[in-house]
Length: 350
Image 1 (cartoon, rainbow, N blue to C red):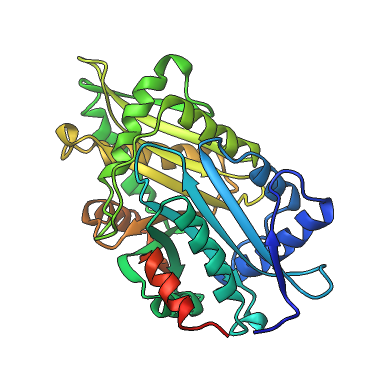
Image 2 (cartoon, rainbow, N blue to C red):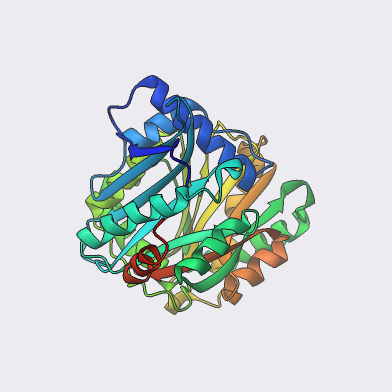
């Protein structure tokens, strides 16, 4: 283990400009390894992201610095959600620059993360790996981790989109117009409908999680507001198309996208969901088609649409496959017991 690299906590709110800049340079180096086609994240976006973490998220970061304390060469973070759900687990991320790997930095960082989780009475840690950084999967294997869900980031090239398919889906949607209507929220959720939005977010719990030990998550209206404020602070712009049943006024489903002008060619497709009682009627396709039609008309800068899907999510994959989404990057969601990490560390002390 190199003695030249020292690790210390990173102050999210009160770090110096040079410290933020060092973290930004490091983060973009790792980002280029994982997303080689994407532009770097500007410094101001990173600063706003760190300074606007929602109040219900306890977010701790440690950074490994080189001997000159001018360059960050590795970091680890742990996310402790202050919610009523999933109090047994924490999320973490860990990275080390390629030229500094296999020097014991990751082991020192994971010790800090595991102990932070244990001190908060969390017994389980979850994280994601991707195929472009195989060192991550190898490290999880060494820790005794379990790969609980495999998936892909799938990408649609808009210049390859079958526009006639989009027209057909929109025309089919008109056959639903007697019973449903579509609406759009551009930006924040309207206050008068925030309780309904909370219920819409329950659809997130119907995504497959494989055999990851994760409970359904039930965010409050205040937590949703905190999350959207954090997203907007870093420059994200959000569109939400929703479907309402006319007879009852109930929300039937929604689809949501995130766009950031710092990455104008890339659109992130977030959740698309329809409540079970409204499925198999074409609402999902209508929502997706309406969103893509608006993107084509109002955001001509967008060239690629990306979305994450579990490989087991057959229903959503069928829709995305029809649209022309193709695998862009393989991912895996892992879980590992905190005790397993600590046992590994006890057997590997230098």
